[in-house]
Length: 206
Image 1 (spheres, rainbow, N blue to C red):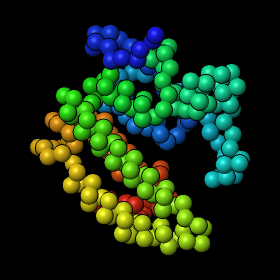
Image 2: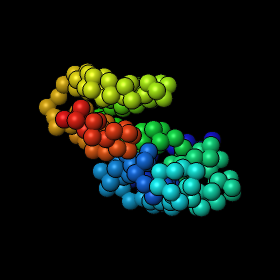
Image 3: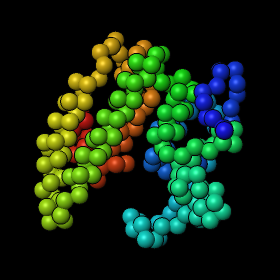
């Protein structure tokens, strides 16, 4: 059975990351490669809209071709897809954690690795809370989102700050850059990639 286990540093691996030509859910994985100064094949599939913002007019020929050929079966017909020496791995968070461990960005101990995971799960909780706020009836959505950005998000940010493990800084966990730093960087620098009201999100993150 093939295993995507962390290899000794002396073993050179071949990495290929497949995703659309956009930041999306592959951006953190790309930053892991950059932070580790690890060369990789960055395959960016074209993605265009006939009408901007209208997903019914989207065109993604390379993706559709890969899907038709069964090349995305392991990822349930989705991207991102990571290939390591020809072995395929799917799911963006699994890819992030695998790369971070493989490339030295999961801390210096099992406790630090758990803390890094913890901070990543905090972001997941935030995104789930936002989706819940968006999931109300259409006539209630505007008021619900206004309350979420003005009250609930700032409260969440305050709690998140208190949950950061004590340390000398500037890194979130331990004395070196980790996956947690990169995950939070993506969230804080590009809130428009997830939140509909990017400016309101930025205001809460100040």
